[in-house]
Structures are given as C-alpha cells and as structure tokens.
Length: 84
Image (cartoon, rainbow, N blue to C red; front, top):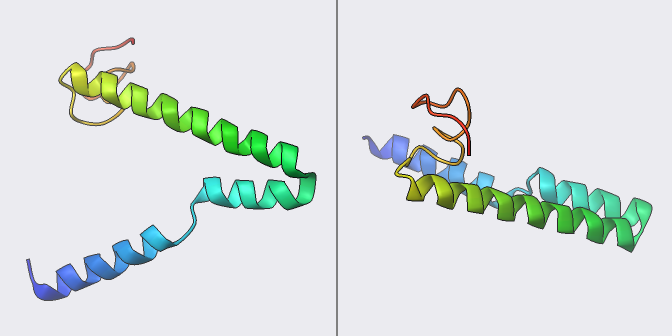
C-alpha cells in the first residue's frame, strides 16, 4: 500500500474519531431542550444499548463467529444459522 493511501487513511480515521457520533448529539440536544432528567434517560438508554451490543458480540465471538455482532446469529446471517 502506498504512503498516500496510509496518509489518507490516517487523516480520515482521525477526523472520524474526533467527531461526535449520533449518540453524543442526541444527549447534547435532549439535555438542554428537555432538562436533565430526559438527558440522563437518553444517556442511560445509550449505555444499555451499548451493553447489549457488547454482550451480543461476545456471544458471537464465543460461538466462533468472528464476523461481528449478529453475523451468523440472526436469521439471514452470513453463515445461515439463525436464532440466539
């Protein structure tokens, strides 16, 4: 791979890592407009969803499916097996 490609990759990844994602934007918009309680609820919901994702990912990894969370575990996955 050329040095130009690596440089482009590094710059792109740096920008993507430093930019806020949709979860951050949701909490930053809900908190000031609706108050601290809905902001905390939005933050807690994001934490629960992230926890669920990591549990699903760990379950997939333990089953030997290294394609990612849900790959091969959910119906229509890349390996064709379905069901949790």
